[in-house]
Image 1: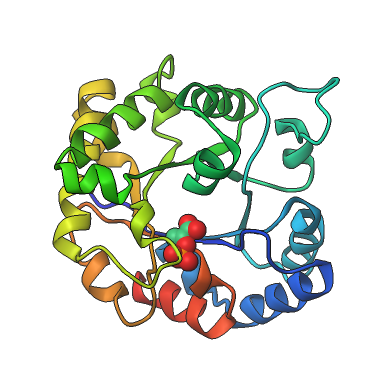
Image 2 (image 1 turned 60 degrees about the vertical axis):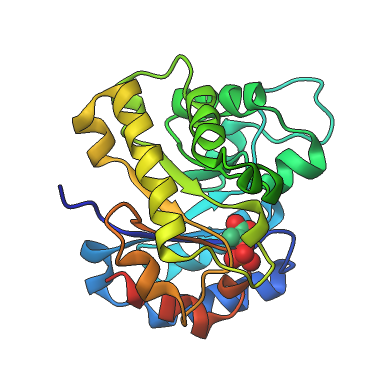
Length: 256
Ligand code: PEP
């Protein structure tokens, strides 16, 4: 089954509004109508940039999607510092990253939290980009596939196949994120294939074949071709290389 590739830029806590607008304009200037049919491009800036980024894209009539980097599962209330699904939808988001390893590692996000966020997003008609990935210790133990598949199973608990089909999974080995150390295409493919097999167990083969699985972890213009040539890698979730227009555009073009 042919899956439409995706390139998603995770800006993390970079680019205040002025810089975000400039970078979005640069990316938007490179956008060409062809992209629309060949690749889904997503920009995931910090919360405060969501609306300004969306405004630039709407003004330019550019079909690039906007995603948040996190969300809370309750709709509203006494949850100081949190941002809800209706709030990010109102800012123009179509996607939201969930369970990034920095959120799991630095902010204590659990598999249960990830699952609540996935279900809240689907309930609010937004599409989760669900991040999974192992530490170096898990890889060295030789239990990567089991560990990552358990994360997938937990993230999708209580989700049906129709909703799962709207989701994207990003396999991001923690030891490769922001380190300049990329998984080899073979290492990445082995885990992405295991993730797809797990999705097939959960939702059936047809849904699993339709779902996009991204690789993330120091993906850059020099290594993208070999990674996306693998049969179960449908694009990338990009940190560092999404902060410069040139490198992000090169990554987008690599999957077209
Ligand atoms: C990420 O943060 O999701 C990521 C993959 O970062 P980097 O590309 O910088 O490794």
